[in-house]
Length: 500
Image (cartoon, rainbow, N blue to C red; front, side, top):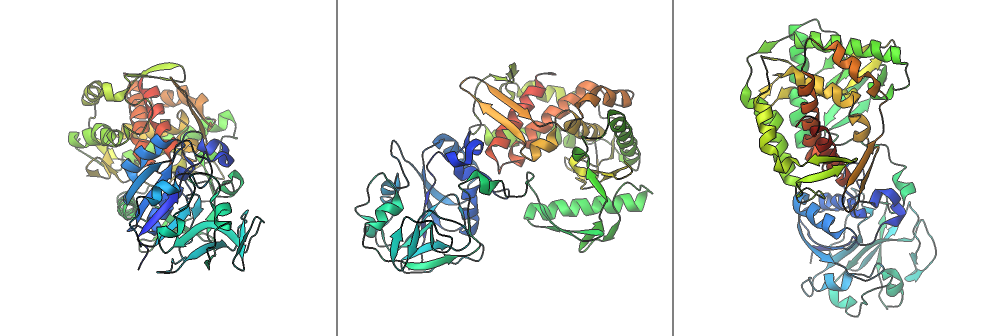
């Protein structure tokens, strides 16, 4: 009989992950842009899950309701300690005489690992250290890299665990039972229960859609998700339009569209250039503004007010409504954020809609659509180059409200979005207020200069309004990280309060 059920031990405070579990259970800590628990969902999308939670149980409950696309039941383990906590209750939800898998939530299984259809197995680490080992049919409390008990067990039926206690250490209890296991080698699997293991990972941006193959002089981009394919199509259309309708040079050279291969720009993302002098920053910002002005002039069309409403209000509220029950304080009329009493958008959405309806958008022009510092390279001679265009605005391809581009640039200068995107922020939620600090790009001093450069082109209040809206729209876009969802919401309210 094929194993249809998986019990996931997702309890415990995850204290060894330190600040990463301050606001959420460890099973929601993102690994390679996916919460630990969701790696299991991705590997076994058709299984039935019984998930044991306790620490930040309400966060886990709401997060699963919002984002889980598998069949699951959530069990609250209350007042018990150890890895045994909650397992007895979880077993009560299993049918009799059916095999099941029991695993820990901080174990990321390799793509190659196959679970046997029948038998009794124990997963053994082959390239990471575990505190217990299982060798020659015996459990020993001895660290091992080759025979380590990795936290994955396949049982033929729940009757084998009929006398399981309600608390204590699961492996220590197993040691006292007369159960024999076949060995299941777990090559390339990894446990992320320690902060030191997590910190070995490459920094991940929110929502990567492409796989990049970096060659000596070119970059090959391949979409890796359905949404990535849709984004790639819009990006390619944008590059084609720019190349066919202008002599605009401040984009990479495109060598091939299928596969998509482009010039590798020798330089740095602008958010990595906070170390240049203030005068150099002014020179660079001036160059960016001139570059975007030239881009916008390449093409224009009539304003589509349905797209304005979609981009600024409908999309934002759709995303916010999805996470309303997930974010702390989202059902309060006012939220204190960084010592500022902020109106909650859910209670003031009509005011936001009225402000959006009153915005002036004389025409649509060619947009980049996402011209943050993350999508702007700076060459070695301090020349800006645009990469990763968005290619649409609302319902319209290529063209849109140019103030959206200026707000995206402001998003990096003042909002420090690029550092937030790298999860370099600190979020503290107490009983009655929120404090959030984002690592600086070190460009905030140019806020006034930014508006001086655009004094005849933009309305400062509109840019600040769009900046707040962009933060609010980031909420479910950054769904893989609970702290990013909450942080984007609070930053949106914080900046919105300036202009509501």
